[in-house]
Image 1 (cartoon, each protein chain N blue to C red):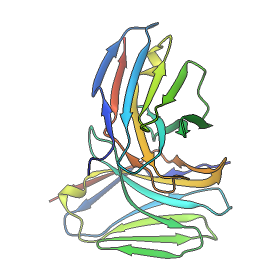
Image 2 (cartoon, rainbow over the protein chains, first blue to last red):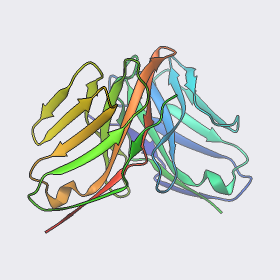
Image 3 (cartoon, each protein chain N blue to C red):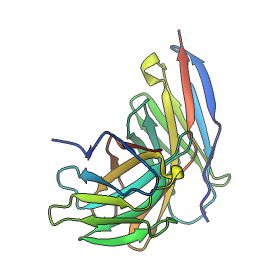
Length: 112
Length: 113
C-alpha cells in the first residue's frame, strides 16, 4: 500500500516565478491538506481540499492556491514567489474529517 | 486560539527513558498528537489521544495527558539511537467539518551512546 507521495523532491526557483507542487494521497483517503514548514519551525496549515473543493484555509495569501482532482490527488500553486516562500512543503492525506493525517516526504522549495 | 509550546532540545543516553513535554491552550474537545520527523523527511504520526483520556500506551510509547494543566507528555522507553529526531506535538479541534492540527516548534531529541 503506497503512502502519500509528493513531487518533485526538490525545486529551485527565482523570485517572481510560479511553482506547482503535486501530491497523491494514501490509498483510501479522500482529503488532502497542505502545510508549509520553514526551517526550525513546525508545519503551518495552508489549506485543505475535500470533494475537489477548498474546505478550510489557513492564514496564507491568495498567491497560494490549490486544486484537487477526481482521483483525490492535489496540486499546490504558488504565484509571484518571494524569498520567504523557501520552505519544505508537506502534503498530508486523511479520510473524511481528517482525525488521522498521514504526511508525505515533502517538496523542498528554494527561492533565489 | 490555539498555541502549542515545546522545549526545543532534549539529550538522553541510549537505554534511558526520554520524556518530551508539551503545553496547549485550547480547552474544548480536541485531539492531541505526537509526530516524529527525521532529517529530510516528512512527519510520521506516532500516536494521538482524545482530550477525555488520561493515558495511552503503545509499545515503547506512553502518552500522558493532564487536562487541568493542559500538559501533554510523550515517554519513550529504552531510547535507541534510531529515536534521534524532531518530535512535534500538535492539537486540533473540529472546525468547518474537519480537524486541522496546530503544531509546536518541535523538540530535537538527541540520543548518545
